[in-house]
Length: 299
Image (cartoon, rainbow, N blue to C red; front, side):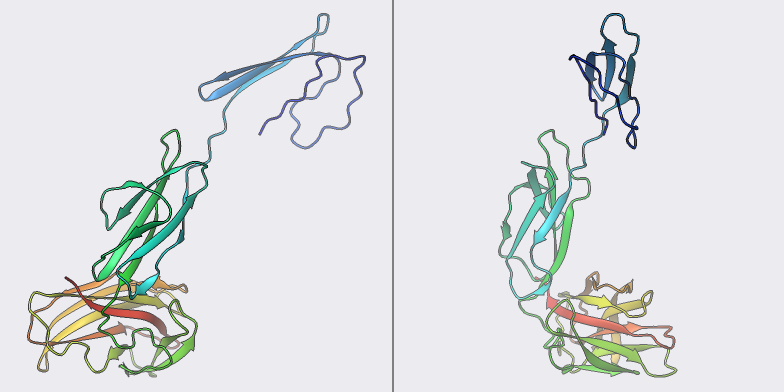
């Protein structure tokens, strides 16, 4: 930011030291006045010396742009929650900003922090909020969060708290590890030697008799110590021993916990449902981590 220091009068002109870093002009030969002009998007200046003196300086430059309006999401549900209500707190880097909120890609409407929703349906939901300053400039990248309402989670141990009950590893080993985005422990799945395909599956199957045309949705958290893998979260429907339908949500792992995009399965009916997370084309040293898995029946 440019600064001006001007001597407009006095008994004498003192000597100046060595120019400081980034000094543009420095002179001690004349008193005078600084004329400033402010325009739409720019400003100019001219030093007018006292009569009989010749030193002057002038220029023009664009104004520094305002800091873009930004929105911070400070609090709210994360992952799978056993409540059909949610409360969010948020703020902005712009004083006296107004906020607009949106739920599940609905229209934005005026809101304030904290902002609460009640009576939410089972399944994944996405909240977005953006700040708008007094001049009408708005945050072009609203803050967002996706979470899962799982009041009736059909997976009995989707959070892997203290055990792996309700799950079995296929061509793999599974173990608990400390930490994770939900609770105290999570599941780490590692392939058996030489196995290119491995998975972690529900056992027993969480739905023994599916209902035709009913939607079921699975979601959860994923990460890996060996990122870059493609891991799929799937809902598989069987009638007897025959697989009649499979619905999957796949994504590449990173070293950070991330949510699977929800896998939404429209049931054929009269069959059983199982949930599993799988990896194909495994190599030595592979593994993936899971936490907060859910399966819900959508309305």
